[in-house]
Length: 292
Ligand code: SIN
Image 1 (cartoon, rainbow, N blue to C red):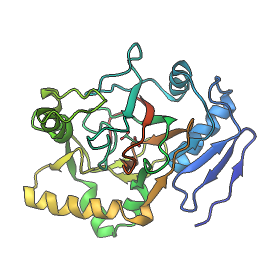
Image 2: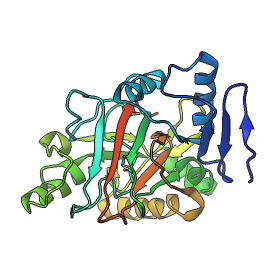
Image 3: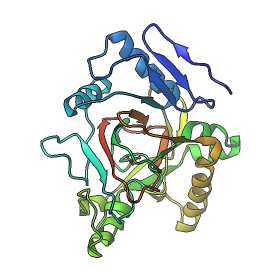
Image 4: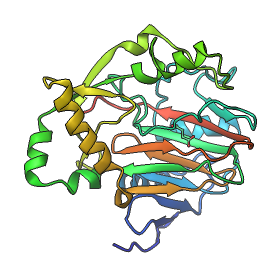
């Protein structure tokens, strides 16, 4: 499907050919948006799930203010925020850092929370000359592409989410810290991360009403009521399906770009490939509701 750029009264929205992901220009997000512009931005986000705003230098105050126009801040656990900025995380990797880049596994942000964030906003401060892309998977089209029989089977299932694999007491970051593998970002390993929370495996988007697959290899431990082998078979199939090329958009960053994605219907993956170069991003989240 080819998608034409659409100029509303206020902004220009240029979607990818698939309709998943769109560039939004013709506005200055460092200033409070007029109501019609904000409504057009929210519509573009609902239509395309991942939207990016190039050439938008933002101070911390401006990033916070833009985030709050989308909705109230989410709660970000397990990562120490920037000093004096409890709602901004700095995703920073130094040129000589050896630890695996942060976010290098498919996930939807904080899906182990009772009310996971609706949106994540990521602002690029320093981008490396190579690598450092972010991949996004369209969990709505991935669901739509399944057979009716498969959809019926998945529709009633409940998946168990947890932060244990990365942030738990036996998780990846705990192991990394035990090996004294230094990382610039301050990760907080915690027993809190070992808790689990159930969510529907297929969730209905509260704005678009569309169904999307809601599982990820980073935060989903299994499917309620199934054996480990049954869960692994179904989840393994779904992860391979959701991350097929046809559902994935590879996002290339430029400095001073703000990208906002919808955690309710996408997964993302931070690609590496920039060893020897600095990458600095500032991230906020917008609170969401309980998946249904
Ligand atoms: C993340 O939020 O998972 C990181 C994304 C990125 O750094 O590209």
